[in-house]
Image (cartoon, rainbow, N blue to C red; front, side, top):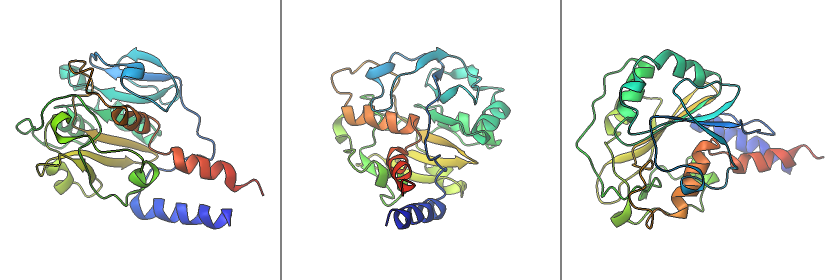
Length: 238
């Protein structure tokens, strides 16, 4: 029975091109912020352990669990495309922030997507107010996450152009009262780029940042794969 569950999970991951997960995923010790951030640690993420939180823009695939590109990264993004692509191809995780997704994507893939007019109420929350493609393995594995109420959603640019122009990118979330796509995934080899247009790095609304946003960020940092890990750990006991 357990082997059938494992086979079914592998089939789902192949269909949706979700990055693979090792049978005993070990989190790397460092969490790197490219650009300043006011929100760190338990203010930003839950459910994924603790990390050495460091500032920098050149992740080491052997020690960096995830690279978070903050809305304040600015010129720090320029010139890192080759290193970031290599990091992804070595199994790395990149998470963007408000108004830097297009620039980060362009730097890695040599494209020319432009930022749009800001959308959303800018209440800092990372968790989208609308789930898209809810049968995607990320949402299946994190089905307990509740959408952010529209009035306290985050803000950012629209990822719609990247989703429309890049076959490898899948929309996963947006703003409930608009057609804006705020959250998408781009698998890259064994790594993943989480395209997240939300002002999660701000601490201007500490009372409205939800635990769902914290667990959502934890899932992104952990590669969204906590549930598959549990299945893998049990599957070869017999």
